Length: 111
Length: 112
Image (cartoon, rainbow over all chains, first blue to last red; front, side, top):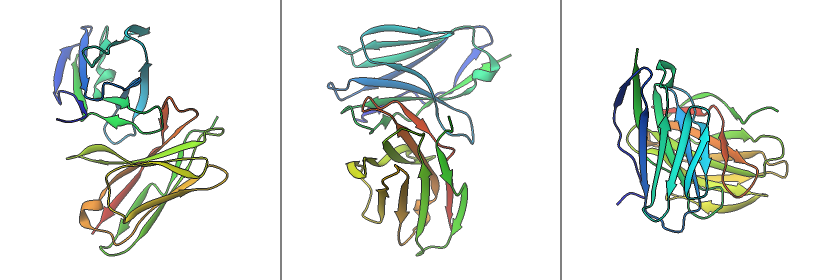
């Protein structure tokens, strides 16, 4: 079992819809969780961080964390074509600088 | 504030050679981590340095090594290059231990 798992996609949604990206992790002791966005040929950029169970909202993005189910998700409301990218889920298992990444989910937002 | 700076951006090396990549973290950040990204394996953790000490190491052979200087700048070295080492090498810096990492633009290494 991989430490961090994501559906590789592609996930295709129409413009203006809600995109839902999911991630599960295996280390129950993990405390910090992150979503990164990576455009083709570019480096990952941080979208959201979340540390506590529940929802965290930032603009059109909402991160959800359920530690009991070892599940993290990212919702993107009012999806735009510019949101088309690969979304990487990352888990910090030990509160150091080490991040474990999922394989990423490719999101396509169609005009 | 300047972001994470990696040099060089592109490298072409021959099998058997060695290579050194450089990373300058965001000012004030003391943690520097290195990752290898390939289409097949995704983003894999190489190692992390904090205040000049290696704090974490990933599952890579000993050909991969690194170091951090007193000004937090970091270098990674790959010796005896193999074709499979062709990848995007990413450096990330963090201010604290909660791991909010900011990535540099990466170094694209091609081994021929």
